[in-house]
Image (cartoon, rainbow, N blue to C red; front, side, top):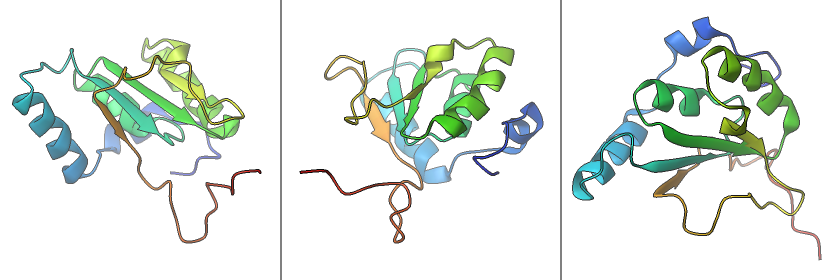
Length: 127
């Protein structure tokens, strides 16, 4: 699954987040007496939105993704529209790394494959 390719429905059908991600979200819901459609989840560094779309498909309706790179976001937006999700489901972070969500909006924020030894996905803050 390359972030440089348009995300297709067939890829989503074959995708599943890690067991740890699913277990963490399920445990959080259980401990906090939240239903799937009540919990607010953000995938920070979502790329084309695979986890976001999978979670939405599973009933986690208030799930969003953000990324610093426009290309993978754009490569996921066609599928978002095909699945009936709003374009705002996937968003590009502002240049200062901020979102337009209110403070303390999300119950869970997670990242998958964002921090790497090569530091491809992150840059040193400017001074």
